[in-house]
Amino acid sequence: DTALPGFGIGTFGSRTTAAAGSTVLLAAEAVREKALRLAAQQLEAAPDDLVLA
Image (cartoon, rainbow, N blue to C red; front, side, top):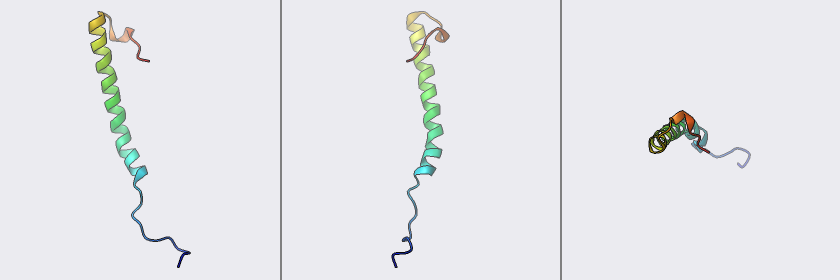
């Protein structure tokens, strides 16, 4: 019968995005802070004075 969809377990795309999205965001923020800290040290400036674009 083609009126009903076949059995499947799903793509899990939404679940993966929700689970991994926060982890990726936290990692990106940590990399940003470290980059600013290292650049500030090299430039003899305060990290708050620097801007990443």
